[in-house]
Image (tube, rainbow, N blue to C red; front, top):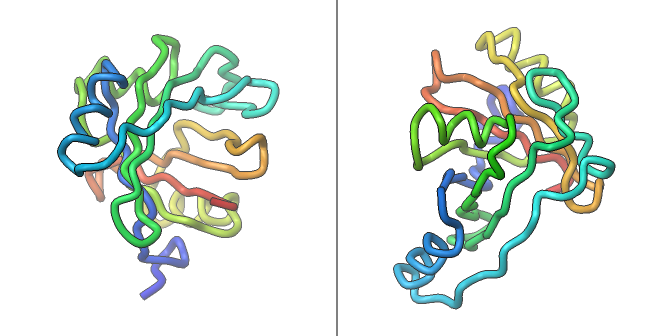
Amino acid sequence: MAGILGTSTLAQVGFIVRDLETTKKKFAEFFGVPVPPSFDGGKFEVTGTTVDGQPAPKANCLMAFFDVGPNTQIELIQPNGEKSTWQDFLDEHGEGIHHIAFKVEGTDEKILAMETTFGAKCVQRGKYGGGNGEYAYLDVHEDLKCLMETLENY
């Protein structure tokens, strides 16, 4: 089963949190694993982050990752207070599940397919991993009740 994204294999579930340090300690305790390191979202010069199609040089976050199965992660995200899909979610909904993510090839094609099939809107997009990978958050709340993230070169 490949579906619109060309895959049905879940890569990640992302949570928005207010306090990354406290939350990652609780997840580590729950899983019985060491507390993972935190990562900054990266500099705009590398990420090129856009929010609602506009450059978002101040959008950033702190993140931590837990491997929870073969090729599946839980991502914890603490927004930095600037305009981003992460901050919007925290302001509107509080803490909780923000997105589900899938590894894809051809981000532009996948965004177009999601726009035409589900009326999805690309609400945030950028690069990660030193600019080697690309992500896009697609708002599909109307049909799928969440944000969908595509991860290319993940």
